Image (spheres, rainbow, N blue to C red):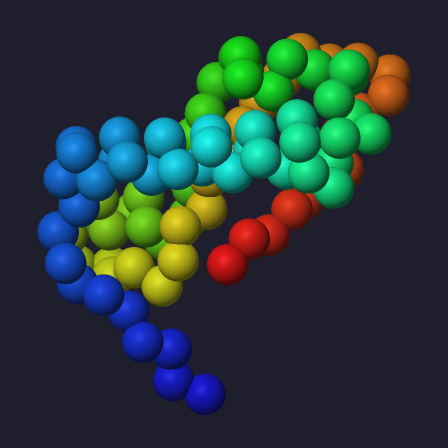
Length: 90
């Protein structure tokens, strides 16, 4: 199966928009949506760090890898009870 990749160059403005949209989706899910049961575990709107990961990040630096999708990781302080490991949105 061939995977299509975009070779469009990512700008700093694109990364800012990716961050803002990702943060909005987290808030919609964990503060008012299906993930509301975890609302009191973390301050979802105040992560320790946010990182873009994998292929799109490589493309941002080498301009030749291509972009299949965007992987964004949000990091919060350690707690014994934690959020689900992974959530995928399309």
